[in-house]
Image (cartoon, rainbow, N blue to C red; front, top):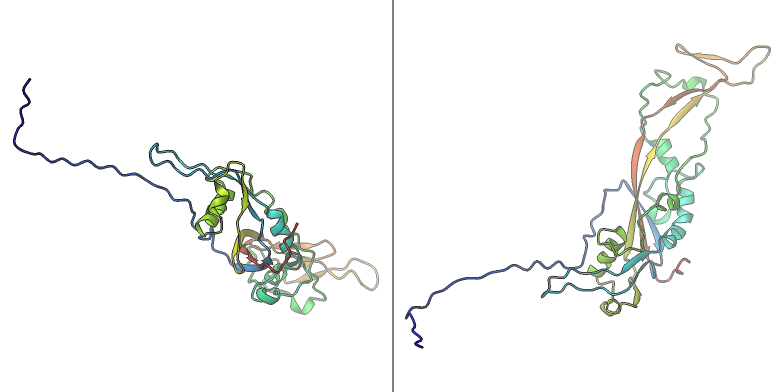
Amino acid sequence: MSQLHFQETFVGTVSQTTDIVLAGESSAAPIEPDHTIVVGCNLSGVVNYTGAYVAADYTAGQAAAYPSVTILVGRLTAAAAPIDAVFIDKDSADFLTGLNAATPTLQGVFRNHSWVFPTPLFALNPIEAVLSVTYGAITATEFDDAVSGGSWGPSSVATNPAVNLFEQCLAAGKVEASTLSDTNGVGSASFVNGDSISLYVTYTLTKTRSYTADPDISGNGTATIMVGDVPVGSAPSVEVATPVVKTVRWQFVHDSALPAPQ
């Protein structure tokens, strides 16, 4: 059997692209806030995970598998509760205090915003006829109720917000790799002072004005007053402003000196 060779060498090219997705998420805000409320909080144990983080297999092309992630949001709501109580109180000053001195309370917004009334009762407010102004109770969603329906886990689905936050922690070096190698392992993100986790709540505010005539009269009859062409009596005459939307960033800043909320 003869082996014959053609005395010329030919050149070809071969290429392949391997797409490698690194664990990590953008820490960009999901929405632009109107105001920020800073809450000091011990974030230890807030971002928890169980199980192994299975890295992608270069040879087989296997996708990564995530551990099961749970966010203990109750620790955040507990830290926020004292500030939230002031934020929604009708008797609060126009602004919060301390680090949040530039952030208005809800009463501050109600009192100072330039409200627009599409169908006002009067061309001008009857200042000369006003005997009293009383701010009614603010009916507002408390912070813990606003976030109670969030996707806090446990979840190992890549698109779940809890897993997204876990990946942000992983990308920021807040997760020890050694805690992700054991399928029976458990761990939590570690934070240093100044690290923060932010939650965003969009509030829709509606302002209503209710006018009634002073019921204290001399003699018989029913109290009434004419303001322009509008009669006002004992039954409330109401005007409602165009709702205003305010987005508040609740920024929980880690402080190791604070006790971890239970």
